[in-house]
Length: 404
Image (cartoon, rainbow, N blue to C red; front, top):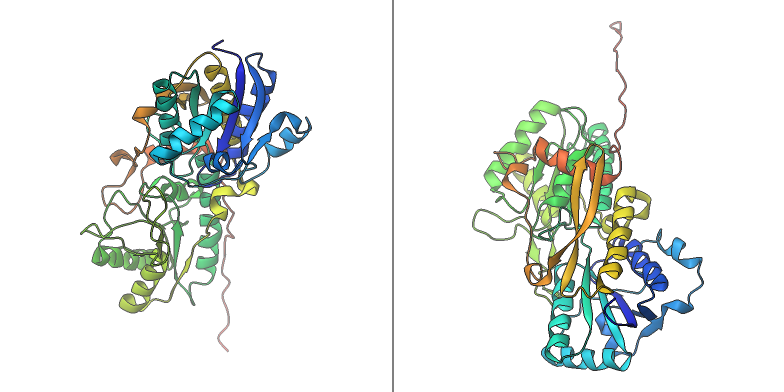
């Protein structure tokens, strides 16, 4: 045990279906730990510290935590607040005043940076405070971890809606034969790639997948769509929202009003709309597009059981480690086996994580750059908590009609 003191926890970044499971893992473990006194929660992350929005989590009724574990979004509220140098000193003063010795922050790349800076500031001030980050990102772009909590659930969502949208497009192919599905994922293609997980037959959606790791060349894109249309009679294209052309420019536009967040991440909009218009105009094929929006990252109806359990695991492990004196680390997930699927928690230095990004490896992308490989399916399938959703087809045995 490092030192007895109070623990504070916060949630940051985009909300997911399982970030609350991590929170519950933290809180339930902290409540039982002899090293922990009070258990505090920051409302809306570190921003809550500066607004005196800190709550007593020991005061919550015992039964609420099992329900919160199955609740989407972020129970403490989230934020995208970037700490300034002045903020760091102020945050440390507030943490001292609360006798906080254990700081746990649940979030992605930018949240890891926040925890890293808090840990360094405490060390420089000779204040005995231990900081650990708990991973969370649907983008699955955190390095040094096999995958991130949140990814398994969005992968299950995207693979399911791809099949549903594909069936709709196939049924309406004499009216709208082309559909573009735009998905999240920042500058990594993990989310777009997951659309393949429900595909059983060659004719099933998706037919084309475009990820940010490869440029989308307009002429080649149109050729791909036309070839699939001739082969299958309809086309379902999945595209990451941040794909770029061969010159490195975003296919879509940067939002003119809200161009970027506090960490410099650009807000992109209109990728699918642009591509649908391109298909309609240049190929003469009526094309429509779908963009699920924020529901894709926090749909509890589509949550992966594996994802929920691992999210809890990393929250629990963070408390176990931080109360031993571990600091300036992020919890990771290490894959033990695929069949049966098993994993365990680990640790990595925060300086290796903060503001870094893990892209889709080359071996997961098809040579043509318009699909993903079997190796990706083997990697991702266990994370969605069982087989992906797929649907049956009618045999469609035709009868001969008499000529009238």
